[in-house]
Length: 320
Image (cartoon, rainbow, N blue to C red; front, top):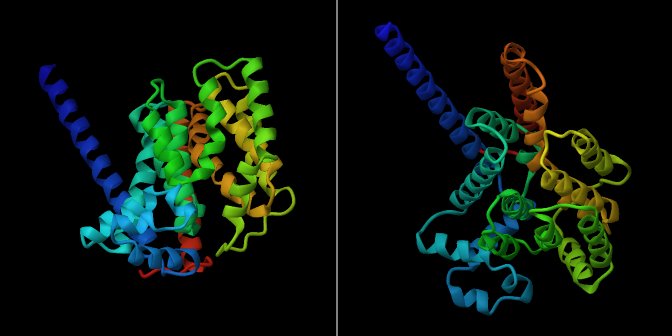
C-alpha cells in the first residue's frame, strides 16, 4: 500500500513538472512573438523616446505630461543604463502584464484555475494588437485592479499605477468602497464619475489621450457597450463574484457610456480584457470536472488558432 502511494506521489510530481515546463515554454513563446512585432505607428514613436531618455535629467526637462507619468521614462533610463534594447523592454512590460493578471486570478481561484485563466488571457487576439501606449495603460489598470481586489491596502500599487498612466486616476473613488459596498457608496461613486467627466481634470485626460494619437480606431455604435455590458450582465446577479469585482465592471461600463470619444472608449474598454479571464474560469466551474477536462482543451485550441490567424493575417507584422 505504501509503495502504491509512493508511486502515485512520483507520478503527480512528474505531471506537475511537465505542466510547469509546458507553461514556461508557452509563456516564453508568447513573450517572444509579442516582442518581435515590427516597429510601426505608436510602437515606433516610443522606440524613439526610448533612445532619447538616457538619464534622469531628461525627465526633469521633459514636458509636463511626461513629468506627471514618469514611471515609463524611468524604466527607459534604467534599461538604457543596463545596455538593454527596446525589444527587451517590451518583453519586460509583457512579463509584468502576465504577472499581475495571474495575481488577480489567484485572488479568486486555485493555482490550476489561475493558470488556465492566464493562458486564456494570453490567447485573446487583442493582446497581439496593443501598442506600447495602450499596453502601458493596460498594465496601469492591471495594477490598479490588483490593488482594489487585494484584501490589504498597499497604496504603493495605487501610486505606481497612476504614475505609470494617469488615466487610472478615474478609479480613485473605488478605494472608498474597497472593503464595504453599499447603496450610499455606489451613489457617491456614480456622482463622482459624472462630475469628473465634466471637470477640467477629465477634459485634460481626454485631450491627452486623443491629441497626437498614432491610432485610428472606429468604435462608433454599440460595440463598446456590448463588450462591457454583456460581461456585466453575466456577473451582476451571480453570487459567485465578489462585490468589488462587480463594481469595477459596472464602473468600466459607466466610463464607456460617458466616454467623450471613440478612442476614450477603446482605452477604457481594454480593462474588460483584464477581467474577462475571471468570468471565463467561473463559467467553466459551472460544469463538472469531467466536462471541464473535455471542454478546456477545445476552448484553448480554438483561441490558439484564432490568435495564430490574427498574427498571420492581422494588421501588424512580426519578425518570426
